[in-house]
Image (tube, rainbow, N blue to C red; front, side, top):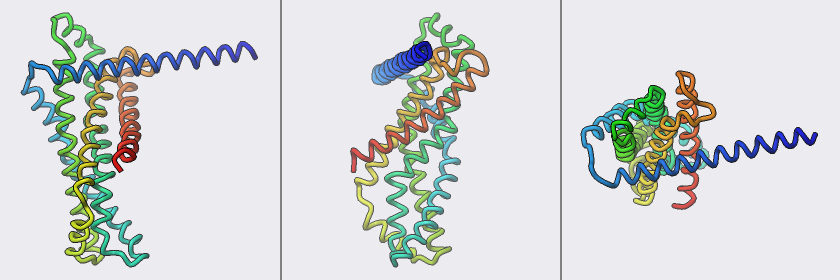
Amino acid sequence: MKLYMLFLLSKIGDYTLYYLEHAGRMNIFLGQCLWRLLTPPYRIFPVIQQLNFIGARSIFVIFFTGGFTGMVLALQGYYTLRKFGSEGLLGSAVALSLLRELGPVMAALMVIGRAGSAMTAEIGIMRNTEQIDALECMAVDPLRYIMVPKFIAAILSMPLLTAIFDVVGIFGGYLVGSLMLGVNGGTYFQGMYQSVAWNDVEMGLIKSLVFGLLIVWISTAKGYFLHWERSGGFGAEGVSRTTTSSVVLASVTVLVWDYLLSAIML
């Protein structure tokens, strides 16, 4: 029994030290990337490439997801509001739900699945094939060369993608509420106009900026420290496990920070 307890305590200590070390490593990585982001020289063309990859190529999935999210919000909200005779508040319910919560969170989750996983796999393969080590041997800073364009593009893209998600979702709710359920279109938009304030829009924009930073930080750091991952390691299997771990960690982190930001800004 004593041997088992000693073994258990040693494993707990081992995992605690590993996760503390890994958290410190990732925080140092974030600080180094942000410092390089704020200091010259700047390379414009790689940033444009990453804006295309992270932002422009995500528009279709954002458009599609936003439309159906707004439609299901209108459908469910209508039957809830009808119980209280408040169908005229449907526009307010859809708009506030999208602007404050669902827009930033759903857009972030879609970007994690489409672009975040690709960034982790790309950088993980570069680490796996020693391309990052080769850059360092040639005196090229891999953080400035590879990471900074991704950081800039993700931080700029997320508010724009969130705005597209919100607008498409509001019009998706209008289509269901007005054309299918018979809610007056003027009432839908008038209720939204009266209830939505700038603070609601501001909350969504701030969340999207924070989520963009979290996504690119976790996605790039996981690939960059591929060889330090317990569940990762070198080889194709290591890259796949690290990519899966990155998607899960980024998604959970977005949801946790969504709660924290909501609690702070309410």
